Length: 318
Length: 256
Ligand SMILES: Nc1ncnc2c1ncn2[C@@H]1O[C@H](COP(=O)(O)OP(=O)(O)OP(=O)(O)O)[C@@H](O)[C@H]1O
Ligand SMILES: [Mg+2]
Image (cartoon, rainbow over all chains, first blue to last red; front, side, top):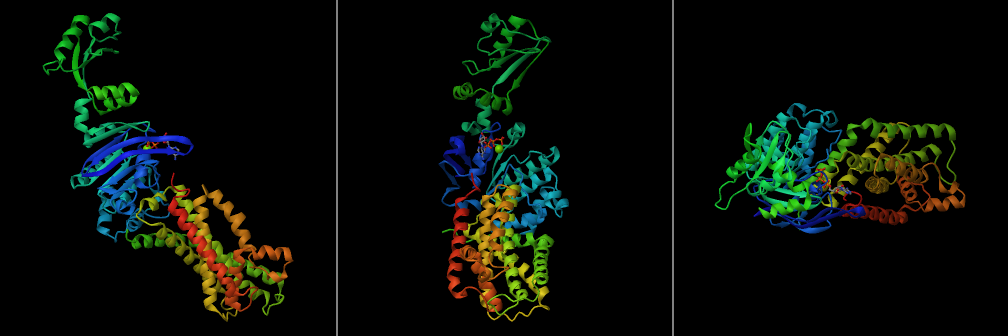
């Protein structure tokens, strides 16, 4: 069963600005799902369509098997959304805001749960302040708490950690992980890719309204992330045409300190580390230092979004 | 199909009531004082004069008119300010994200507007109790007209607030639409005092029937037949509420 099945979702804003183009995506139930993309990619547009804040131009969505657009209220009761834009009611305290939000979602007052939310989001000390007296990070945490008041089965967070300090960010993620372990599906966007890589088991990358890839994190990292051999010569290296020919197949790159060679697999399934090293030594002599670096999510992300068509090509190739 | 979310509607209603209670200086005391000020000024300006063609003196004539004007203006202010504030501060999205039907949202807003209107009018009238003789020949009519006026103005405030993009635009609607409509609804005069042209304008103003009917309930005198006007009033109220419902349902000016 999928928490979300998105089919052919598209959005054209007024004035013909296309923000989403035929996006199809499945979010497995119980997954911890990262929706990544550069600024303006269409992440918030997608989330706001799910939240009923923006109208879709085309496409279908089901939530836990129910049609999102025809069974809106059923779906809304099972979904909690943290908006990207900070929203707050200046007259009310965090505690009042939570009680009110719970009411909106049709929940009977459950003070124990509200207190727990305040506690987990480190707002207990500020529960009696007016919202306008809270700092930016506190307001963001209050939004997270608001999304959880009705114990939703799917939690969608649009940049929940923007402006939240390191310590609290970590605790927020711990809390999300706990919820996820309890069966809650979590979909989030973030620009902290290292956090996404560490936390999430699924990832989708969109750019300019197009879905570039959507896979389990491990598959993506195994199939798209590559390893690079770096050799340090203690001087900048500029590659000549001859170097290019001799090292063809390793996608050589000169750098400030030496060279980098991309590693792959030879026919018998072995890493091409040995060949690459030999080839480099043959051209430049023995390095002062060397090592292998595996690409992380950030590298993959930059590669996929950096140069459109080539990026998609490399995704297909591997 | 989907069941009602009464808890949600109640929560919204309570928030709307709390919102104006929290700033009661601005939302209750000031409007009641303003009405009082009008009363005092006109009392001295007009002396003991009687309203032409009616059995009442000007002071008594003014009291229900001013109460009605305060109700209308405050009902409008309640919904329009809450709406624009929600939009500007961004928290209106919670009403869109919550499992609330358009009916529930509109009902909660309008009921809160009625409560605000009644509280302001009551604050004004209670102070006057020792000075004015309210015999109130038709309290039922006064009540119906008061509630209808608040509903209608609350509805117009909802629509105005949805339409507006910022506080300035709300102020514009208040100053250029609501103030003239309420000032010209026969609060300060009987239409019989007016030249024919202005009488015609008055008769086209739905709030004139509201004010006049309300006054009839209070004093038993008026320019129109309150039972005949009831039709106009009920139709206007229903149309306003339906417009609110339909606009909210369609996400007008709220959803991209
Ligand atoms: N209300 C709107 N009206 C018109 N265009 C919009 C509107 N909101 C967003 N857009 C456009 O839609 C595109 C996608 O925006 P969106 O906010 O979904 O991006 P995002 O992926 O969330 O970016 P970010 O990482 O900066 O939050 C952008 O080109 C943006 O300019
Ligand atoms: Mg965004």
